[in-house]
Image (cartoon, rainbow, N blue to C red; front, side, top):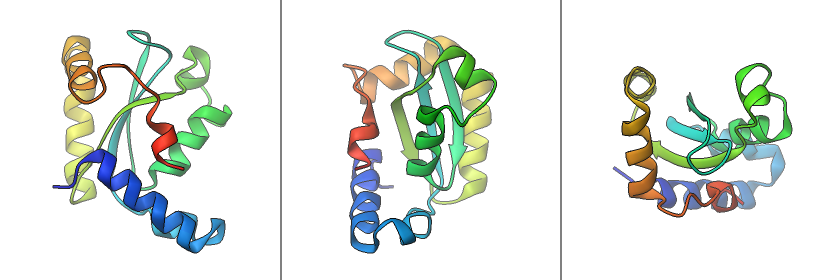
Length: 121
């Protein structure tokens, strides 16, 4: 399985090669991701087949309700999965799990809670 950082870099290269017109086609890969309001702040767990577009939606305020209300705009964790059913199963597992488990995942991959969005560009 490809690491999240490698997958993001690969998707970014494809985006740059194709320009914005091919953006969504270039990144059709199943990802589970966690957005945060700040370090140790509110967390949002989601799944998508187009990570750059979905993160943009969170950050631009296009996502009503939870993410807009709690200002979850930092991409702090993500992982690519081979298939969408596997990604959905993992998302449900994370959503049903404890906050502590999510914090542990974030700390293992991103101990500085750096916004991984910059890896998408």
